Length: 273
Image (tube, helix red, strand yellow):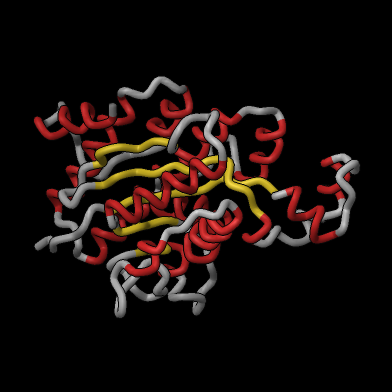
């Protein structure tokens, strides 16, 4: 039997190094080229801390309590500033109070959002007050409001943490499709923001498929909700025009056999806009 769940918002960020912060940290003059600033920070030896990341894309998937994927998109448009992206993300959280879900969102995505909100003087008291005193988006073990699938599935560090691509391979769902996080900086330097946004969306759909399997495993979703989710994902994929989604569909074998679309699936496509 399924249980009553809130709407779930599966999300992901794509970031590049904050060069201005790195200049200030290392006392590098403004006339030093960006490439030299990056060279002074060995990103291969040690990943850049979340506080020194700048957000260039945010994507999310809205999943209804009945399991239907209602929408999946990158927020805003390629021309949006970082401040606009951060404001929109917190608006979704504060106004909608969804359950958040993601991969390494406790260790990376949410801290980055908070750091960048502070950089841009964005106040979000509702992010901190919702669910208090016993629940909230920042409480590590509160699955009602925020599920970091990476942290949860490794038993909060007791077992080895997996990459999203590794988890996708385990479950037989599409993972990285030719682009990975290490390429985001070069895409950004080439001003290929649309490509970054699409890559962010593919990570969100992969994470949503992992989330759905976890919801089934926990008994939160019954067979009907699982089928509804898979049908709605298929419906969404069928109306996409970017070739990357053809590759995604080719690499995904749903658990259910879908013969046509039910009435709700048609509505789901309309909801995508």
